[in-house]
Length: 213
Image (cartoon, rainbow, N blue to C red; front, side):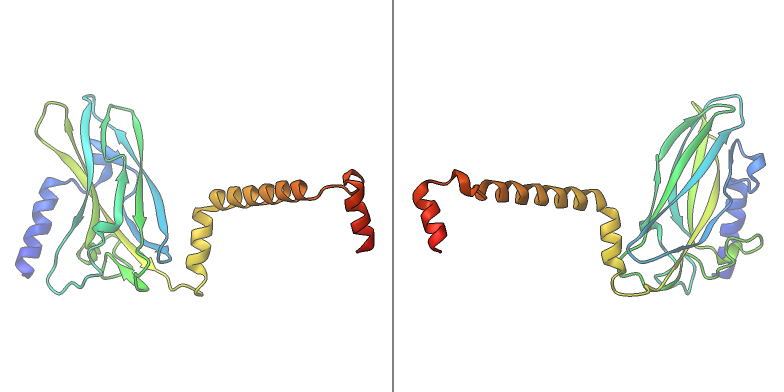
């Protein structure tokens, strides 16, 4: 298995040039490792690509899990990750901004996910990486792709108290909650105004009853 892992690294070294300056499309982030977030939250990170070749290129993003013997279910977090937009075209000198969204499940246990070490994002620690986002592009009409692997890992934090999910829900739905509250107040005011008939406008019989009471 060790030999197959080495072979995997060598193959990807041939398929992907590992310095952003040498890529046909340059990228501003080399890793997205050790992101800190609570369960149930979503963290958004921007990544910028810049076209460096004279020919227009067409490409796409995808997620990848580097399966390694001995891994547990914390290593593959590809299902947590989306990149928007997924597809793109880019020209020389053009800059495109993408958003990598990592949505943490509500039941995610605290600790490191997507890598075996918090140093996975550092140079010389590629063997500790497991989950990646990858972009690949090619000259339009061509068939030779270039791209880059960007490792992703998340440090899921322990919720400080049981009310955190409630706070997250309120934060994510604050406009709906405020509008609902305003509507309830307005309806209550209308009902009160409708039911509160001034005493002077009451018929005389009703006025006598009020005095007797």
